[in-house]
Structure formats: structure tokens, C-alpha cells
Length: 296
Image (cartoon, rainbow, N blue to C red; front, side, top):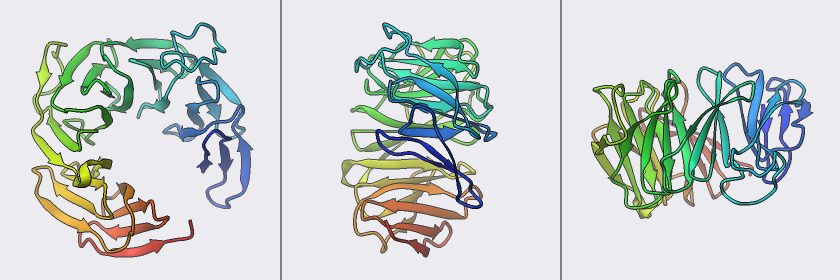
């Protein structure tokens, strides 16, 4: 297990015994495991992306923003500090973002691709399930889809009227969702495939959903990709079909905004976390709360 804290250290624990294992060398405020669980990737206090050994916490690789004036640049400019780092599903690539550009690295720390085209900061990314494509969401009100082989921009997703803060491919990578500060979640279809796209090919959304209260806290696909889970500026979570039909409302537990909601791997349960300090486990078929997790 991995625990991180704002501006602090990342700590590794045994998931079976909860025993402390190691601290990530150099500290880390946000990190994640590699798909095989042997490594951890995140951003250190210097704004660099780091790969750590998941057993010892020792640094294995450091990756620096291409526009940094030196490898230990501590400048706070957007293009010299990385905002996040994620592994690809295949575990062979790491994606980072610095300012308007996105970088794709191999796990040996070698820069493979620099993806440029956004006119605003890159806020979120999502790999396709086969690691062939990368979806980026930017404050320039657009999302883009890129080839991870060539670095070519294949699609520009336009339609939001505000900065994007979230994006995600569906499990089969034939759809995507984006969320923005305009208070909408948009669904995009790529049933015709993504190959052969070009930067001039601009895609319109197939569905637009208005967020309650005008704020989208989180959004995600169900594991089978047929449903969307939305947490907005309220104490209620909505489960809707891919056509926008409301299927369930999860309500009655939280007393403040729900900040995140996600499915279990089998899609049968939903977990929610609220600003009121509580978390809940819900049935994804009946919408009933089956367990309350309190103590925070």
C-alpha cells in the first residue's frame, strides 16, 4: 500500500499486515504503483518525475521537464515543473505534463515523445487500454488524442466552454469522457476507430450532461463501459447510461459534497467519499448503501 501527503513524504506499507516498509527517497506528495506493483511513479519536491523501487523506496529514475534550465531547476514556472506522472497500462511508458506540453518516457527515463499543440496547461491524461493512444485534457477548452507510437495528434475534441480538468477513455477505448469548468461532462464516440486521424479532424461530442450545481467533482466509466458515474456539487451521486438516462441516484448518506466516486473492478459496488469526512459503499444495481466508513 502507498500513502502520500501534501508537500510531504510517500510511505510504503504491507497491504496484508499494514507494517511500514519504506519511505520514498526524496519525498512525494502524489504517486501510484506500476501495473506489476514493482515500481512507484510520482512527482518529487523539485517538480521532477521519479520512479522508485516499491520494495526499498530508492530512486530508480528521474525525469526532468524538457524546458527546465537545469536538471535541478526549482523555478515554479509551469513549463519547468511537472504536474503529474502516470504509468501506461502496459507498464512500459510513463506520461508527464509540464505547461502546455505532454511527455512520454520509457521506464529507463529516456524521453520518447513530446506532444505539443495545446494552447493551455495540460490538466489530465488517460491512456487507452492497449497503451496505443493518449488522451489529454487542457485548460484551452479542448482535449486531444495522440498516437503513442508516432506522437501524431489524431483528434481534437471541441465543445466545452471552459477549462477541462478531467478525461478518461472507456475500458474498450472506443469512447471517452471529459469534464470541464463549464459544468458539463461530455461523451465522445470513436466507433470508427482512431487510425488515420489528423490534427484537422475535429470531433463533436455524442452526449453532454449538465452537472448539478455546475461543478464536476469526478466522473468515470463502469468496468463494462455502458454506464457513467458522476459526482457533482451535491451530496448525491448519479449513475447514468451511455445515452444519458438516469439509472440510479445514490443519496441519503453524505451531508456535504461528494468529492469522488468509483466502481469496484467487477462493477457491482460503488465507493464514494465526501467532504463531510465519510465514505460509503453502495450497490450498483439497487443504489442502496451497504456500508458506511467513518472515522476521518
